[in-house]
View (cartoon, rainbow, N blue to C red):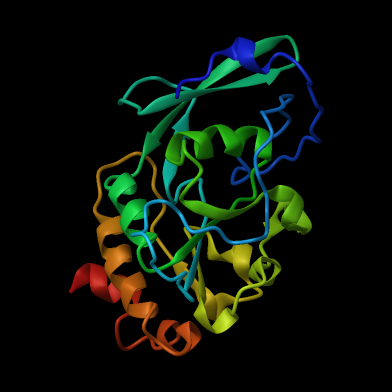
Length: 234
């Protein structure tokens, strides 16, 4: 689904401007169509009929974890999104990380999949609509408003707000300092800037392994065995 700028010209909201390189596209004025933010889990249609809801939860960051965005069209992109600044509309060209669609589809087979981004919903929702157009993959979505404001314009992520069993919950993020409250439950993935890589293939394998452990923290804190970077280089 490609959105035109005319679809977003109504119901404009003003967003506070925060200056920080990791906080993508601050100072935007835009309002997306409403999304469901129900805290109740649904069974995505991707799962087989009668399949049980997994006890394992994977919380995904968006920017530089799943996708990369640029104001420049060069280098190829998968879809555009549109942002309205005072007096003009600009286009952001979004490139999906290699294997992203397969990664998300297979992840739902053994995990509840959620989104936790420090970006505003006006930006993030346009990307989520592209990654999950039928609304059957992401079971909970949290935005900047669910983060904890910190110094230097940073926003801290508190994964406990998802109300899942922390022993079976992992955050996948390229910037784990956003999740300093639960570092032992955070899987750091290399920052994605649009290059070709296979990190999501490795991440899927490792997350499958984590889903079978009694406590993800014990596995993630074991730096001598099966860490993400160990798997990437072995």
